[in-house]
Image (spheres, rainbow, N blue to C red):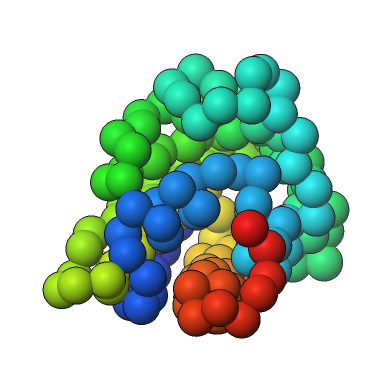
Length: 147
C-alpha cells in the first residue's frame, strides 16, 4: 500500500533561516522526535548525491536507513530518497515566504507502508514540525538554543 503524508506549519522566522536549518540533516535529531542519530556517508554538504545514514525509532522498532539527496534548491526545496533501508521512502521539504519574516514549511513523506504507518507518520510529522517551529522561533527571539 502506498503512503503519502503531507504536513505543513507556519514558522515566524524568515524563509532563508528556516530552510538553511531544516535542510541540514545534521540538525534532524534536534527536531525530529524519532531520529536518534545521523551520520554523513559522503562529504557533509547538502547537495545532490550526498548520502546520510539515519537511525530512528518508529512504531516501537529501530530503523536504520540511508537517504540520498536527489533534488536541492537552496531556500526552496529538498528531496531525499532512501538508498538503503527497510522500505522505499521519499521525503520532500518545501519552504515558502509568507509575508515578512514568516515561512510556510511543508514536509511530505511518500513510500510503502500500511494504514497504521500512515497514521503514525502523520502524527510524528506534526510533532516534528511543531518542535521545529518552537526551536526556531525561540532561537529567533533571543531565547538561546542551538546555533
